[in-house]
Structures are given as C-alpha cells and as structure tokens.
Image (tube, rainbow, N blue to C red; front, side, top):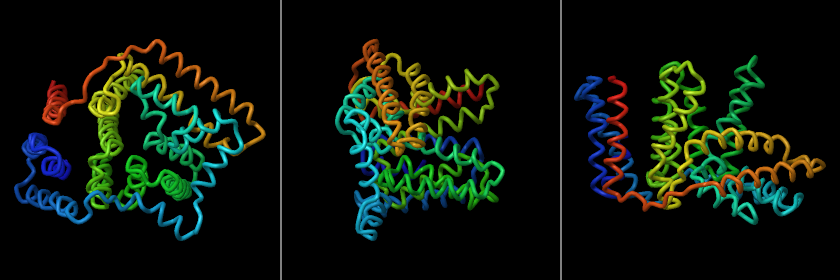
Length: 343
C-alpha cells in the first residue's frame, strides 16, 4: 500500500500522500513496531528507484513477444485467426472478445454497450475469468490436488501468454504460485495478494497507473474482505460483493466512460453469472466447428440481452474524479469500513 502511495504521490499528484493516513492507522491499531515500519518504508522505496530505470517499461508484458521470437511464430495469432476464419463475422468477433480481449467487428458495439452499462470488466477477460478457469480445473482434480495445482498453473500461464501477460490476469497466476510455494508460512489471502502485487510492481512500477491493475487488485481486496466476514446468507454475501466491487472501482469506471449506469450493482450481479457461463462455454467448445450453429445461437442471445439492457439503461453522466478528490474518496471508503467494523 505504501509503495503505491509513494509512486502515485511522486509521479502523479502530491495529494496521494494523504492516503498515508491508511497505513499509519494500520500501524497504530495493530501495534506494528517502529523497526518493522522502517523496514517496510525502505522496501517501499525500491520500486520508486526502479521507476527511474524502467520508466514506462513493464517487463512481464514483454514475455509473450519473447516467446513468439523464440518459436518464430505466434500461437496466439493462430488461435485468434481460428475463431475469425471458422465462424461468421458476428460469432467470430464475439468469441475473440470474450476469450482474448480482441475488439473487432460487431463485437465492438457490444463492448461499448457494456461500457455504458458500467460492467465492461465482466466481458473483458481478467482475473475474474481466469479464477473461474482455475476453479474448474481444481474441481476436476479434487481427488488429486497436486495434479490440479500443476495443470491449473500451466493453463493459466498459457492463457496469460494469449493475453500478453496483462497485469489483471497475471495476478491470478502469481497468487496461485505463491499460495503453493509459501503456504506453510503465509496463510492470509491478503498477504498473498500483497506479495503478488509487489512482484508485479518490481517487474514494472508503472503498472500501478494501469486501470486493469488498479481495478483488479482493489476489487480483489474488497471481495476477500467480504468473504472474511463469513456471512451465512449467500444472497446477501453476493450482493455485498457486487456493491463493494462497484464502490472501489467507481473512479476507474468514470475515467473510462465519463458516466455511470444507475443500475450498476444489479447489472454487475446479473451479468457476472451470464458472462461466467459464456466464458466457460466457449473455453470448452469454441474449437468444435461442427456445432457452429449452436455457437451462433448463443452469441445471438448474448447480443439481444446486452442490447435490451442497454435500451432500459439509465446513464448518469459525470466527469472523472479530479486527482485531488481520489485520495479523499478512498480515504473515506477506508474510514467507513473501519467505522462499520467497530460498530
């Protein structure tokens, strides 16, 4: 947290230093020693120094290019062209969007409609989708957990390659590896998340200014926190997850579209299941060409659902939060959580 505050405060706007109140509050309430706090501050300064060297370079995002150069051809391009060449333009473009984040053809319209619905993160492949893939594999190998771990990591690595090791999907890969490697010493999901974030930042400090990085880590923090409350009512827990994710991602949604849908929470709740199904379905079946009519039918239904939702959508047009407002927004969110926890 302090690493990101330093990077934003030095390279974005000095107002972000106000967020230092959050780690200071944490240190106070959890009685962290001065010696340990100083060690944390020194460690937090390393990415700031690396920023001078690497500048805008994010090393992890070059891995896909390095692999293509070694192989002398691109597996990623071959797979993407497979969907384009073997399906009609509408179906092929939609498959490329939901599986590879490629925005071409008619799927572009769907992408923009999802932005208006304030849930574009559900259709763009991210940590949310990779987590689903990981759970599927582990369910299949629940009686052989070691095989499940190995196969899931290999599949996630391959998928990260297909998505150019974007920071939002790399988070799931790093958390999976760290969970296996250091599970004897670190049990907290928050700590695993933190370590994966630090690894990413060291490999490219400028990634902290990437919307995908911010939304992925903030939403994951919110989700882990809600699950840690151990709410017995499943419906209320799911609703709280969506509300929390909406609140923490609001500034970034506004920065992307300069607007927010009045139905954001409901859209998020409903479409998270819809696109989870669509993603899983096409992962398992996009390569089966002889069921192309079925694929086209499902894509057609998806288009109709999105178009219908867009027609009844109510958009509140707002300007993006100014830089000096953002720190106080997240400070308010943190203090609200502290207050609720105290109550």
